[in-house]
Each structure stands twice: as C-alpha cells, then as structure tokens.
Length: 287
Image 1 (cartoon, one colour):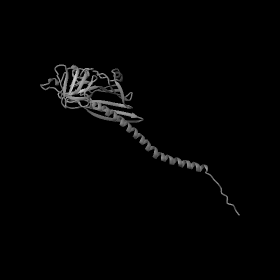
Image 2 (tube, one colour):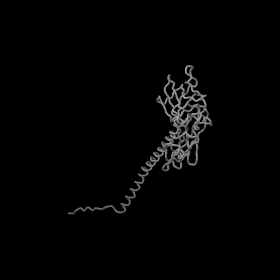
Image 3 (cartoon, helix red, strand yellow):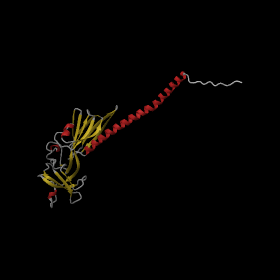
Image 4 (spheres, one colour):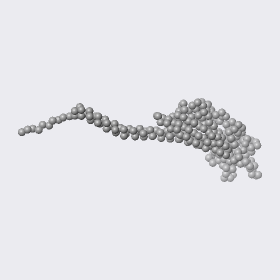
C-alpha cells in the first residue's frame, strides 16, 4: 500500500520579481488614468477661482464708476502703482430753476448765495427727512479749472456744509437747505444736482500684488496716488484682490452728449496659473 505525499512549494525569486514588475506596470497605467484627470481638474478649479476673483474685482470697480460724479474720474500711473480716483454719488435729483410767482424762493438762485431751494425730480435713495454735514452737493462739474469739484469751489459745497433734505408739498418735490448758504457758479443744462458722499480711490500695486480700495478721506485737487498719501488724508483701506500680476486703467474722455469709456484690465496669477480679464464701463458725463 502506497501513501500519497503532498509536496508544498512557494514562490521562487524569479516569480516574485515578475509579479512585482507586472504589478508595477499595472499601477503605472492606472496612475496615468487617475493622476492626469486629477491634475487637470485641479488646474481648472484654480483657473476658475482666478477668473472669479478678477471678475469680482473688476465689477466692484465698475459699480463705483457707474455711480461717479460726472467728469470726476481720473487715472494716474507711477512705477508699479496704477491709481484710479472718482467722487462717489449717493443720489441725484433735478433742482427747480424758476419758482412759481407765489413762492420764488423755491427756485435755486445762481446770482447769490442760496440756502434753500426745491427739486422738480426728487432724491430717491434717501429716507426723508435727511441731514448730514459729511456729504456735498454738486452742480455742473465739468472737470476743468473753475468748474472742477476737486478744487472744492464753484461747483461743490464746502466741507462741513450742513445739508438738509425734506419732503416738499408735492409728490416730486424735495426741499433742500444749506447751512451756510452757497452760491453755485453755473447752472446745469439739465438742472441736475448730485449728492456726493466723497472720494474713492483704487490702487493697483503690482510690487505688492494687491488691488486696494480707499474711501473716507478728504477731497484734494491733486490726485493721491500712493498708499502713504491716502492714509495721510485719512483714508480707510479695503483689499479687493490679491495675487495681482498686472493691471491697466484707461479713461477715454467723452463729451456732455457722449459718455466716457473706462477700460479696466486686471491680471491675477497663482501657482503657475494666470488669467487676464478686460472690463469696459460707460461713465456718465452729462453734468
């Protein structure tokens, strides 16, 4: 009688090496199909974030430009810094330039200092009654010497003027009082009067890779084109975009009948990815 003997045998070294080699090839092929799509997805996500950041920054500037006092936008560039400044408006109306015979005081007097007048089209963004000595009223700013709001004369009320706006007797009438009284040098062809909240500046600094918005500072005839100058004037800073690699602000001046055009270019770069967006904004010129 013969007894069956089972012989146990393991892997040989050659078989183990072949198995490892084949497994490595399989893993390498799998990595090609997994890593490459992941890399592409990560790059697309990063580019989308950069596009969103640039688009948000440009639209933020565009919003301020559309609310700018006519003919108040100015641009300068020096070294790595490009600056854009404007006078922001909070509201606007149309003043009455000829009063009824029963009450001629409702008309704005352009021949002498006037402390009270009425509107024929009301302010719409204010809750009446409204009063402030931190805002300004401007009429017929055309941005030239003698009619430039940045000079704080003739076409804009002085700093510290108390402006009070209350509801008038009719639906479209607001009553405006100024203390002290002020004489506007020129009348607006469209009887437009603007309520100005103050200056706003955007500084694009490619050396610091930042785009920053400044507000709450004093109006000056010379454009402040540095962070130091704006801080000295009392400005508050708010970061709009980081990783800024380049920017360009160009203002194509229009006329009283044709809007100006602001062309804004912003480039943002991060982790080897870079996007550049261009945004154009029409700026109202009619004073």
